[in-house]
Image (cartoon, rainbow, N blue to C red; front, side):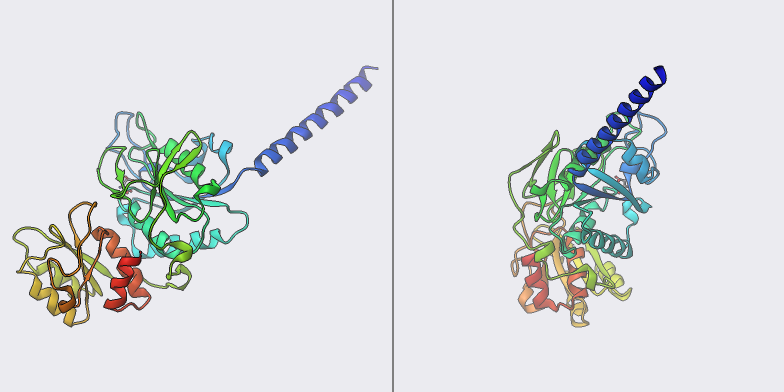
Length: 359
Ligand code: DAS
């Protein structure tokens, strides 16, 4: 009697567990599939003690531990992780950009990937995000995320940033908006955003404002990107095998032409000049830039002034006469990325200027 009772109890418990399993699988099945590609940075950092919010070692925590540290991720997506690099982002090279972008492009073609998150150091996050924005031809959400404090710090920002990034990457409303950067509850376009403060959690700003916000699992949009990107880009990572060397020379009082000449002599195919004010160039430097232009080096005038305006062509310098290019509203580090991508596609100075107005 007891044996048959326990057998039927066992049968009904097994059936219940199977039903639960199916329900869990069904629940999971209706969640977007998000790939998290880890590259290092503070979001993977660790400090000696909780009070160390700015003194720590970046690029220590592996991707599986990052994901395990945010169990809430399972409520918003089916998440898989992959460790692409484990470095501080100030050490990113053009080769790192190419490797990462090619991996993102390949994953974006997979039917079992609905969105991609890249965890990244904050120092050059804006450059990587823009590079992906220009070259990865997908309308699936690609979200780059970092943190200003290591996970070991009091009031660490990385876990909520990661949850928000995965939320946006799995959100159909984020499709077609280009590469996004999610930090501090805000959603920025990879084109405009820059790190404007070096040790606060509210570090990332876009001169023309964020695209939206992500709060408690929902994305709220207030504007859309105005320039070409991803599926509407003429650039394609699958066709880029190398990025030409483009260097940045910084303008200041008492400027000299030593840096521009040395950078060109070292093989730079283009120089981005971070000019003062409206991209102004000291008269001690103009002759060298004109000589380098005559030798085939492209000259791009950007500005050291933080965003919110743009360098006007033929205003501070006769760009038409010198055959120089203006970076429009792009800061020097973004101008470096776009110039390198454009030169890789064979752009001459005329095409380069059009590209700066289109992207
Ligand atoms: N060194 C910084 C970097 O890896 C740490 C960070 O802020 O992520 O970009």
